[in-house]
Length: 319
Image 1: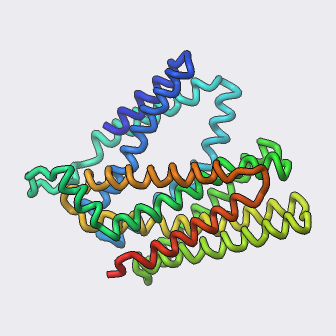
Image 2 (image 1 turned 135 degrees about the vertical axis):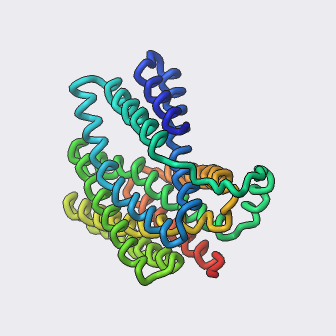
Image 3 (image 1 turned 180 degrees about the vertical axis):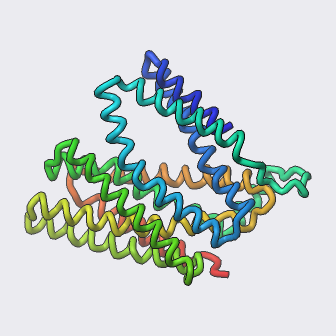
């Protein structure tokens, strides 16, 4: 169903002739994409133990690392050669292919021995009282908030302030891919010896170091007027540390989030996604509010978010 909705939304983008039609189609496309992401976590909860879910999420970080960097470049090329509707036509084909694959190769994972319905209100009451689930939602949303804020504010910092061309800015996403790949590999490697909570702490450590050095380095850039090249190396190096930590932390936070929801995993995953998305929106709004045309707001904001994440971690149930 999620793949079908995504494909319909993509096809709607191809046929759009007004901005309102396009935005409505993008909404449908995003709805399908979000549903698929949540279903992955619900399915993983049905069939894998905690450690296995963490490893799966780490593997997803590895698999998705390079497409996240390469697809914007590919999309730009398709746009230049065939026009922007061709981009969404390709996405429609991908959605249709996913529908066929999931329909024929993905079995039902819900426990058929439990046929009694689980009411939304019951799951919602458990959700509100579940300290671990709420903490994992905040940690995961904070990771997404930092990434979304970087995508929004980073282009301004690197292009408008440091003077990168749009094409050169696009190549910097290769560092994001490398960080995601490295973080996923580290998460899978360290999972042999560390528990999910210890891995979350490890990811946080990377983020604290990365955001602190980023903040101090940006102060040095402003005070001593470092060159654009030195500034670029500093920003990308620190963001790589942060993104490595995000890959490690998020894989394991998502892995343990639904631990107490063997029944009603799909409903719990939907509520979890809604909760996390609202928080991501708040973090993204915060970055937009703090924007002042200088380099300082982004590292300062990232460091504050990371400190908040540290506080949330120490409030989690460590059992």
